[in-house]
Length: 309
Image (tube, rainbow, N blue to C red; front, side, top):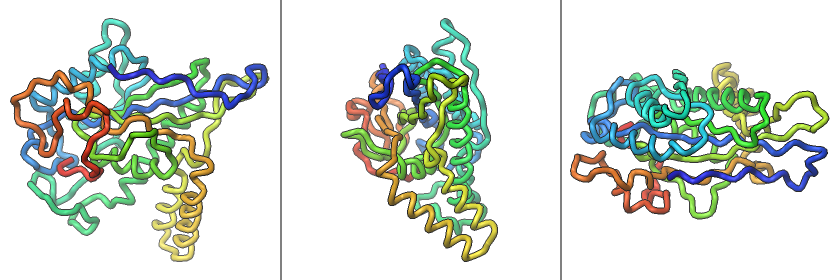
């Protein structure tokens, strides 16, 4: 069972002056296994389905999350991610209906000429037709900004809102690459490759409003919106070297000061403990760990680059 997370502290503020600290809890889920995963073939934006093992993984994940209070589910529209998301919502169908919200920004990175091929080299921006890494980072950051802003503006009395996001290895790795600059890792948590149907959990604090305010909406720290990613990408589009240099300096400064203000906490990275009961015998995606070897929820392989996303 995926553990519940306690509400964030209110930093000692009196309940008479501040409402309870609100937290956006985000579960990042990579889709279940596909035949291309097993064969080491680059999928990119090819619309490949889950294989039998992938469907079993998704069902196990759904059962593990069934007891969790999830408020909203977002998914890449590609079949392997969408079907994983549907398995999560299907497991809780007897208690309440939870729709899946598709979003094109969660699609896998487009790998151009590599798609449909077995390839073990680096995914450099110079590969024909590949989506540039900066463009990938910006579309994921754009989704993140909308996600955090939307839930911060919600009129709610809930202390914790949980959003489940189902996507792909390279796209989620790109998002995490941006977010880790403003995040603290809980003790024992280490970045790793994102396994099929793994769960990475982040807690994003939303600043509480005064109880005298007529609104229950919360505020969001600017760095949590990844605005520096957008500013740098916009500068590159303009092509002005001075503007690019200024945006890069601003982002570097944000990195230097993030330790003073980082409030995002990553409490799990690529957790697959919910797959402990997965049937053994079917072909495994290349490099995938035995579930029983990941009791801590932290993979031993420190490689965030997805081999065949």
